[in-house]
Structures are given as C-alpha cells and as structure tokens.
Image (cartoon, rainbow over all chains, first blue to last red; front, side, top):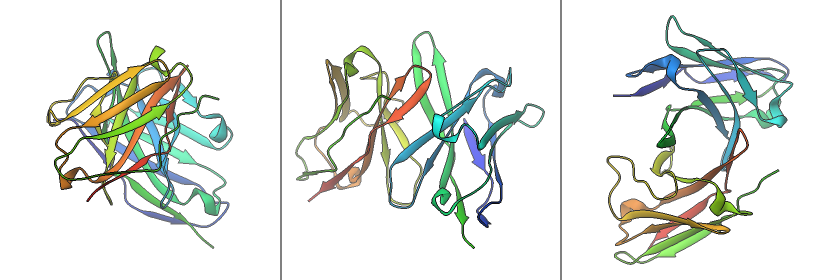
Length: 121
Length: 106
C-alpha cells in the first residue's frame, strides 16, 4: 500500500527557513514525481511545485521560485521541501502528493497527512 | 495564467443528486481531476482523467468534462459526502486548482 508520511509541525519566526520531509513507502520512489501543495487556514489548495527523485529535476510555481527548494534522498525514499525567508502568510498546512503519470493513468494520489507550519514572531 | 472557477457552495438534500461545476478556458481539452477534503483531513482523489474513479471510491461519484466545464456528480448523496471539493487541471507543467466548493447535505 502506498503511503506518504510527513514530518511534524513546525513553528518558525519570520525570516527563518523550514524544511518539511515526506517519506514514501509501498512503491518505487524514483519512478514518480513528488508534488507539494499548501493550504492556508480556511483557504483553498495552492500548488508549489514538484521534484523528480530520479533526476533531481524540479519545477516551481512562479510565486515560490526564489524561495523554495525541493529535493529528494533516494537512499531513504524521502522528499523534502524547503521554504526560505518565511513570512506570516506562509502559515499553512504543507502536503506532499505523488504524481502517477503513465500512458493510461494520470493522477495526484495519494497525499501525505500534511505538516502544519506556523510563522509567528 | 490558467484559472479554474468553482461555485463557493452547493447544497443538496440526502438521497438527491449533487452537481459541482468547474469552469476554465477550453477545459475540455485537458484532463480534470476532483479531490474531496473533509475537515482536518488531507485531500482524497475521487475522480481523475475526467471520469475515472480510483479504487475504493463509491460508484455514486462520477465526472464529466466538455468544452469549458468539468462536472462532478454525486448521486444519492449521503451525509458522509459533506466536504470541500476541489477541481484540478494542468497548465503546461503546472498544477492548477479551483477555489473549492463546500458541499452541504441538509
């Protein structure tokens, strides 16, 4: 069974950085891109970007391009999302989600349980 | 940038059919997906590639996509279906989400 397990909640001060991890199990980690999505309190879903664990390639949403770094460690089947220069409006739940993209199957599934990042002075 | 528009809320009576729409320019030319999110939980995929149901999703969930509108239909709606629903599509290599629709079953 495919599972994505994320790291625990974080509290950070404005200007700091946060690194959220996402450990994958139940499938070949290097075979699928990992996407990151965030959700501010009471708001909708906001896509941040993806990383290819096999090649290390990335693609980021324009909004986050200068502040986010997405990486993977294939030795422990774990993806990471690091967000720098945090602001109060970065307070949100951050989710990792696997992309299945084959000839006849395209879906974002499953999702991690989410990691709450709170930015407060 | 590409945008997807959903109604903020939809209400339905138990046992009736609920329809949630998602509008975008020529949305029918690209695949759409739908996610269900209940309070305090992660989103769950309920429809992908316009009309495919993942394993474990009840048959009462169905989807369609044509021209500028994708539609999620929930037949014989149950109280457990009350949740926020998000549509999703691709814009080049980027993921786009609709703003979400709160489905109330009353």
